[in-house]
Image (cartoon, rainbow, N blue to C red):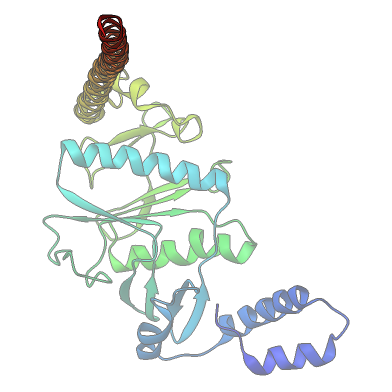
Length: 327
């Protein structure tokens, strides 16, 4: 996070009795307020703020606009829908999906806006292809998804009003606003005149996309977030989820078999090692026994040598006595 050094010095002087952490937080808060009102050129935004490691700002008509973070519930809703779309694209690879902090530029009637949707899709037949080395998209996304940032009313209005108007004018074909509590949940599609109309849910609950033909999901499931196993057996999802599910299940089975094979190999290696240990122990015992036998043989030989020596001495003594008697 960039911190204005003048502000920091000011607060350090004025708030001498606050802890360093309190000062830092106060400076950061004030710094964000200033940045949100800071006028910067588009060139400066792309160069300094677009890929800033600590800041996440969008830009409109010369002013930075902080991109607020949604709560965990809304993030989980967005993650579930992202997974559903990825399943669809696995079965129907007709588009590329990108996530977070990847922006695109819109020339609008009231100026220029640079936005970073939470999720966005580019169809393969979009006149401006998405290239793998792009750091921003040079065309107009076909579908944008925003997880509502409920930090304050300004953040909510930006997603529900400002971006809705901008995406509509720019030609984003579909725009989804996700909100776990349902208050701001909305799904829009451009009509023939380029105006967003709310997508009418089938049976009051099912959203069907035209940008991604065949993609459909229940609004109620955004809160329930059914598992892939449940979706694979659900007629709403099974056509595009089942192929991905089968692939993942096959991959999981292969991983399981690989793990089992590895476990069997380890067990076999342990058995071989144990057999080798037993063989080595047996060999050690045999060697120990051979050593004891050799030592016993040496002891026996020493005893035999001693016995022979004693016999020789006895014989010598007898011969001497015999000679004395004969003399």
